[in-house]
Length: 134
Image (cartoon, rainbow, N blue to C red):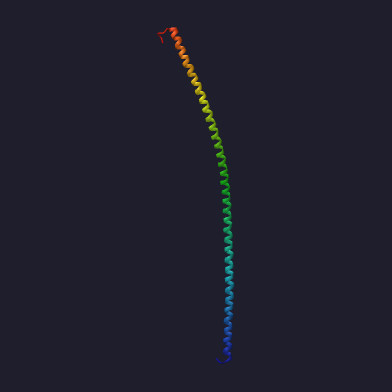
């Protein structure tokens, strides 16, 4: 161990080991960095794909919302029509009630006229046929 050649061999061997460690570490670092970069790129691509799908889903929901709004507007128009029809039926019912009262009044006047005619016919029959018929 006192010889210079032994110390040179130890120094050369140590330098070779440290060089190998440096090369392996650098190589490992580059490999790891490129692997992480590739993974990052793939993840970014996947996230962009997912965002595109969510965009398509949002567009579909917007279309569905537009259809529901159109259906809502149509149902409101139908409600307004039914309300107009309801008012029309109410007006017709009021007219029918007025006509019913008028017809009932006419029937009552006809009844009164028929009763008066019946009384007149009875009076005429008593006069013509005598008091025995009545």
